[in-house]
Image 1 (cartoon, rainbow, N blue to C red):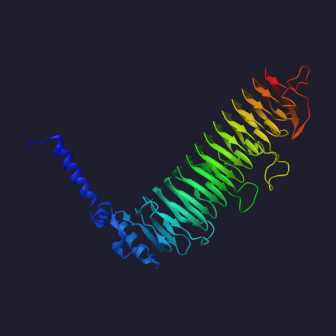
Image 2: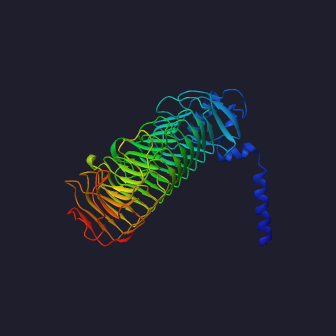
Image 3: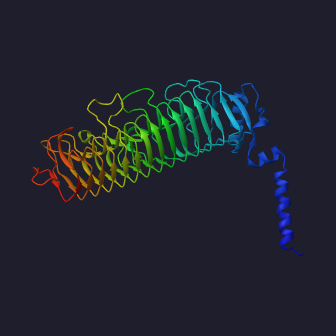
Length: 451
C-alpha cells in the first residue's frame, strides 16, 4: 500500500475530528468516571451531598478520577478518600457550600488531586482552625487551578501534608487563604490571593524544626489584620517556627503589616520579591531565628524595609544584600510597641552582613545596627543611602560588640552620615567628620559622603 504524506495528514484530521465529535459520556469515561452517572444534576437547586459522596467513594475505590461536568452543585461536607481525584472545568464547575465544618475533608489519606473546581463558601462561618478544604495527613496531595472564594474561615487548612498547591485563586477569605502546619514537603506556587482578613499564607509548626516549604511566584494583595494584634495578622507570608522556608519571586501589595514575616524561622530565604504598600516591616526575621538571607528584593513603601532583630531572644546571623528600599513611612501601625519607630531602611543586631543595598527616602535612618547593648559583629559595606535625616546609626551603648562601617556612599543626610546611638537617641556627632570622637566598637572606614 502506497502511504504518502497526504494520506497520513487526512487520517490524522479524521481521527481528531472523531475525538471532538465523541459523546460527552465517552469523553468523560476516557478521563475518569462521569459524576452524572451517580444521579448528580448540574445546576439543580437541591442539595446533592449524598450523591456526590457516593460518587467520590466509588471512584476512589475504582482508582479512577471523578469528572464533574460544568454546572453548580450545592453540597455540604464531603469526605475525601485515599486516591480521590476530583476534576472539573476551570471557571465552570462550582461546588456551593451549604454548611458544615468544611466543604472537602480528608483525614489520613494521600494521593488526593483537586483540579479545575470553584469552591464557594457562601460566607458561611467555619469553626476555628478549619478550612473550606481541610486535609489532615497525607502525601502526594495536589490542589491545582481551583478557585476558593467567600470562605467564612480559612481557604485551605492542611496538617502534615506533602504536595503541591499551585495555580489557585483565593478571593474574599474571612481568615487566611492557606494555613499549613508541620508540612512534610510542600510547594505553594503561582497562586493568586486577593482579600483576606488574617494572613495570606501561614507556614507554621507546632515546635521549632525543619519545614522546607517553598513559597514561590505568588501574587498576594489586600491583606488585613482583622483580629488586631501587634503583627500576628496582616502579613502576606508568615512563617512561624518553620526552618528552611524559601520565599521567592512573589508580588506582594497592600498589607496592614509585613510582606514576609519569619518568627523563630531559622535559615529562611527571602529573595527576589516585589513589595509595595505595606505598613510595618516589609521583610522580617525576628525572635529565635538564626540564619536569614534577604536578597534582591524591592520594597517601595513600608515602615521599615528589613529587620533582623531580637538578639536578646537568640535572633542572629543574616545576609542582607542587593535590596532596593525606598519611600518609607515614619511610623508603624497602632498596636506595635510604643518605642518601635518606623522610617528605617535596614535594621540588624548580630552576626550580620549588610552589603550592596540601595536605600532612598527614609524618614529616620538608612541603616541602623544595634539596640542598646544588643550589637555584635555587624558589617555595613558598599551600600548607597540617599535622602535620610541620618545615614547609618550604630549603637555605642556600653557592652556592645563591634560594627564595621566602610565603603558606603551616603548623600543628603543632614543629621550625619554615620552617628552613634543610645537606643533610639543620637548621642554623637557625625563619626565620618574630621576630628570626630572615636569609639572602639565602631570601626568607621573610608565612606564617600556628600553632605
